[in-house]
Image 1 (cartoon, rainbow, N blue to C red):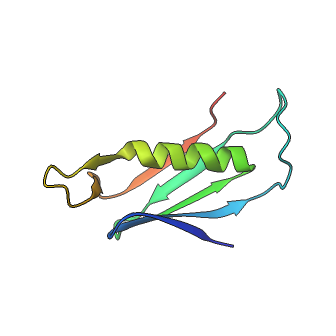
Image 2 (spheres, one colour):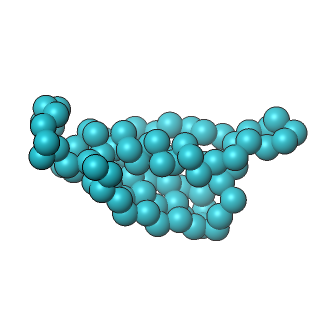
Length: 87
């Protein structure tokens, strides 16, 4: 299942894969994720848990900057590939 969240007309992030349905929080909860934005503006994220997906969306939101003219939010990069495991 692919859930898209559109940030502006040209970039959409899709959480493509969450491997575990376990929503419990413990000291061993896996927060890892990967986030990729291709040259054509398509962003996909994959995570082991829903918490990793949450961190991927947070990272995605931090990549954007507001257009001074107020026409949207833009990512100033041709492509991005991030793999992280926050603690």
